[in-house]
Image (cartoon, rainbow, N blue to C red; front, side):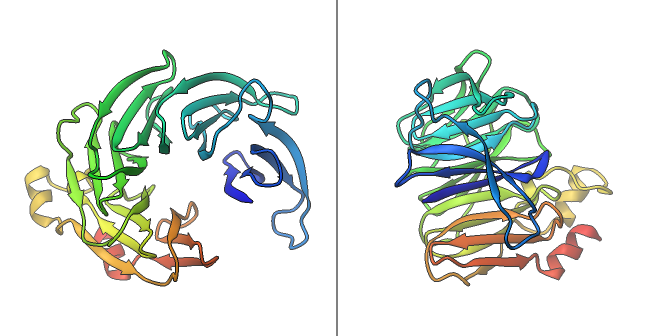
Length: 291
């Protein structure tokens, strides 16, 4: 069973997988002979965490380090592991940090090296990988449990969390006493994945176990758009935060969604019914942002 696919940012012909079942659970890096060919062949390049030195529990996510090419940050159900790519068939373990007992998501800080945020149970935590210590923590980030976390690509120290209370919450990691913003009303059950748009951070995508995909507007916590004449003028012109559109094209729990890297207005979602659905930001919302 393959539970994870992640293409290498530096080489589109290399893909990372996490599998379990009949084989030993492990992350494996593969080379695709021709990504555009229907009969492309896979060649195993390296195994990550398959040896006795680092036994991985159920892997929740594998992140390519945005600051060190080739390095991997892996979050399993209990720990964060940092791996360094070498010339051999295995990745070298640089460090491991115990972060919780039921980790459900993690994200590497795109603005600062060696900083990773995780969610487990109801907790939001930020870790300093240099010291392997907890830097910030918020208990009760969500009412029942936090399922995912994502960094704002344009605003340092700002993260987004998704929870089992069917809500999205925005946080400043330096001031965690209260969330910056909370959005609800789009989902009727757990929100399992939420992602900022990489170019327009006022757009947020989420999906959940209610089989729905939701597109949100979060302009009040976004980076200042170009051409605004100060905070007061921007606040008057800005449309209200909230749900833009709810997509109900899946027949089972939707467990992942993502934005296209090639087109800022395209996004995709995948569900347990085996269906991959590709959608586009409504034209009205697109031109509201651009004009």
